[in-house]
Amino acid sequence: MTRLERQVTICNKLGLHARAATKLAILASEFDAEITIVQGQKQASAASVLGLLMLETGMGKTITLLGEGQDADAALDAICALVDAKFDEAS
Image (tube, rainbow, N blue to C red; front, side, top):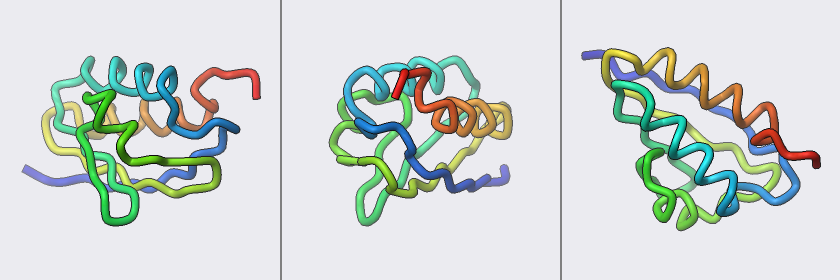
């Protein structure tokens, strides 16, 4: 099984806060794939809200998405789109 990797920069003002982390975790769990988010020395499952919050990812930080599984490519596309859309937040 191939492992896919993408990088995306957090561009919303509040970073990966509780509401954004929840949206990301719900989205990640919709796919048949294991998605891991890496920021610096820390990493977490994209399906774990608490894990995502522990990354302490703020505006301007670049995160690496690692995906394995049948839907990994589609999952990474969807997560990148969510991040690029600033988690559908106004600012």
